Length: 353
Image (cartoon, rainbow, N blue to C red):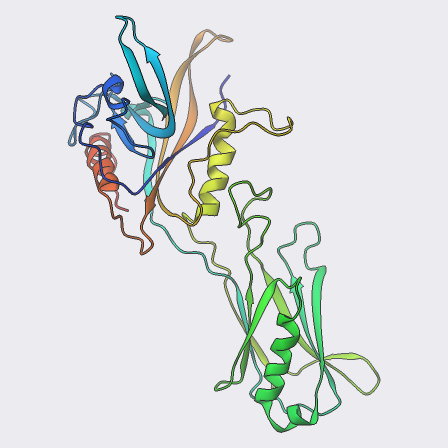
């Protein structure tokens, strides 16, 4: 039997090719003068380009097609040589009667967590040791057990000026090459701010081993008393205000993870071979993506019970957008021009991105 299938198609922020016109066949638009790398188009049940405004009565089934960067040459049945045909990825057939949901989600930028330590009420005492203890909560293996501690013994200059003390603290933090936060200090408000850093093992490249995650932490501002014990600074002296982390939506790391998780459904099932043979990723590092998600059922003939069954399928369509979150090309508008009327006729409201 089939289980839930997730498929991901990724488009670039480009203009629609002039040859991609209503009724054009897949054989025509996949030629070198047709679909461009990263171009996405909606097809009807005959795998011809769906006309904008077409409804379920025009075609009860549609497909979504993504052109890849790979091309090939072949000779067709009449003996005509075709050069530079574009390889495409195809969604499962989407039947209007079996669509469950039709949604969109615009790109939302991620934001690292911050912790603002207000030192306004603190008067450093020369010779007293102060500590910033960062407790990390995003380490799945050691939740709340992995910490980094930064120490500073206040000088006479620190006791005179809180700004000097703040500068000394951030110097301690930022001098640590293995830190997971970056420190900054505002002389005007006397606030020391710690900001999470990107995790290199999951935010660097398409080949990162780990899934996308963000630094999540708590801060303890401490001092050492005359008996050598650590003491928490009273809230009347210092306060900590947290913000984030905000994971956002459509950041390239998230789309990379979605694409990677969907690879087994296009035949990539051997992840033990070394080096692992993988197709070229369509995600682009540092790009931003709007999302269209179609959940639907697919009917199939089950050999076990000799009857038609349904399996749930999720199609994620990720469309690259410009840095400011606005589509520079026409592709997104063209796709919605095809999908919205068809989905309206299937009983779903139009979406925007």
